[in-house]
Image (cartoon, rainbow, N blue to C red; front, side, top):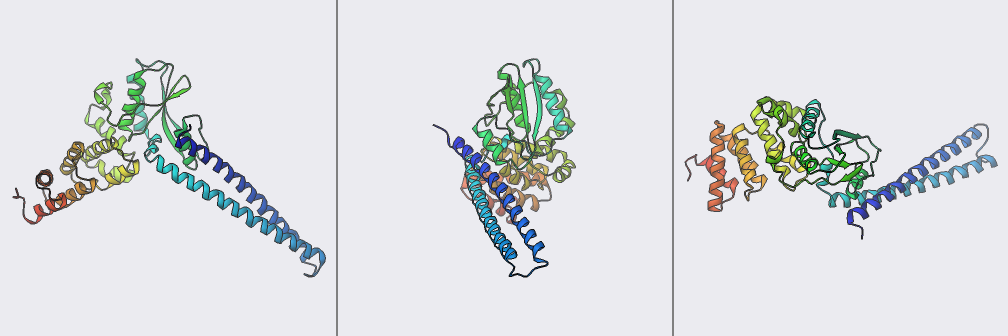
Length: 353
């Protein structure tokens, strides 16, 4: 029995083919209408409107216009069916957009892939690793139903993904995919073994201890490069440039993004959360990262609002970070909403217990 995704992918393919047929029909009907109008107008220049040939061509123009309107109606109906199927697919696959690589693919990201490839070459035979790009209208329908559905969904835009190819299957392939995914915004690389695609195993929390060491990223500049690689998956380049002037804040933002990747969040949801945090001081960002990693019961909105309130109030960011941690502890102990506790700490002073 076909899955929901398979059925919707098949329906979407049929709807898109029908829309293309109707687009061609509209083009033919418009050309026929324009040709009839031109012929009537040319004949009409030297004759009256009561001339039989002019009336005959006028009747032809009306028929062609009616056929054009009917073709446009059929096209609108086909477009509406395509939109409805796309909406259902978007609902079924909200997080599957991670299969495409968001953000810029720059020299830093290419160097990262080269470094990862060198680290795994001894374990994986015939290893090939690269970023693949598909332009608008270019469909790769060779994968599973999920991949085919995504290709049809985003066929009108440029799409990129990381592709791993090897001569034989190995657990190292999946480790490699997990390591790339961790730093590349949760993007799921495609794995091929002898031209046969195998699904990448990307658990929510990828254990870093089993990954090979990447000496290139041991230094402070290396950590910043990895942070930029992750942040570019979610934030605009202008925001990255501002954060680069606060190096430790950029690293904290990237760490928070990697925590969010392990949750059931779409790329857009992660982006929105990070945009609420970029203005916070480094110390407060560190506190937010700790609270996020501990998966406390507070919503992101509560933590971000309390963090902004305290960071704006206390001139010393370390005091603001400490106040945020204490506010969380007190909210857990008393059951008072976190934002209310933060507000109390602002109005009543830092000496609350």
